[in-house]
Amino acid sequence: MTHHAQPAPPSAASPPGAPAPPQPTRRRSPVGRIPFYFLVPALLLYSFVLLVPSGQGAVLAFTDWDGLSRGWSFVGLANFRDLLDDGAARGAVLHTVTIAVVVTIVQNTVGLLLALGVDSLIKSRNVLRILFFAPAVMTPVVTSYLWRYLYAPDGAINSTLEAAGLGALAQDWLGDSDLAIWSVIAMVIWQFSGYSMVIFLAGLQGVPKELREAAAVDGAGPARRFWYVIRPMLLPALTINLMLSMINSLKMFDQVWVLTGGGPGQATETMSTLIYRNAFQFGEYAYSTAVALVLTALVAVISAVQYREMARQERGAR
View 1 (cartoon, one colour):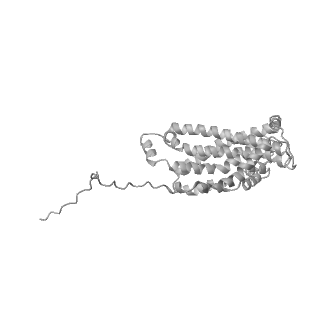
View 2: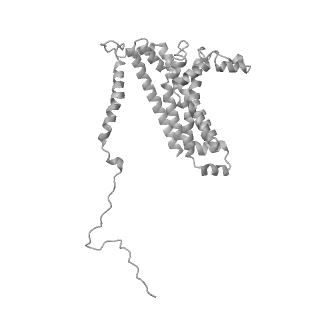
View 3: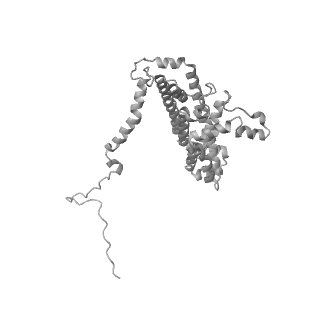
């Protein structure tokens, strides 16, 4: 039998005097090779469209400009003092915060319940997902005109109640100053609960099936499985949903303007409708920019506090 010699394995250490083997060079990522100045056009466009007009608006809040005159003069904090003395402005702030808080809480609660329900229905999951998400892709103006018809005294809601023998519950949904703001809130929740549902569904897809099954084997019921297994892993989706719904609710304009125009009286006046009314109906452009500046600060402060709290909860859940 002939034995073939096996080749010797390469030595780990180079022999003395031998040149050092070439070291592999670290390859830079494609992103790292992109020059920074590629961002300059986008930054210029961003500054031209957003930063410069925002800065000009902030300056005009301290003037008496009416939006048409060529000249204006600085009036200091006079516009902000007028804002504090304006009962309509205080009411608009209260309505804005009320809408934002109620919409944020109820919309995300409904969205979460829809997500949990749709996630458990394997066969009809995609159909239900499209069905509930459909209102969110409609423009707010179209949706508002649709609901204005539904809310009309002789509209579909009151007609349905009367047909069901519940005529006593029929209301002037948009003409009653006590009901109008809640009618607006209900429409917004109906439209955007599906949007929150989709984000929660994406979060549920990240919960490993093995964890749920292990918790079920250990005897945890649906409520305990949700609180101790699913909820911690849904916190990032919850943070996104809360931030988006809060910011959009604080800035809400289209729905209120189409449904009620801020009325009846000033029962549904929000800061956004107040800004529009003062700027384009009353010609108080400087005062309007002062209200807009306060709204911007309100959105920034509430969003920052909300994000900080949610980030703290996410860190605690890890």
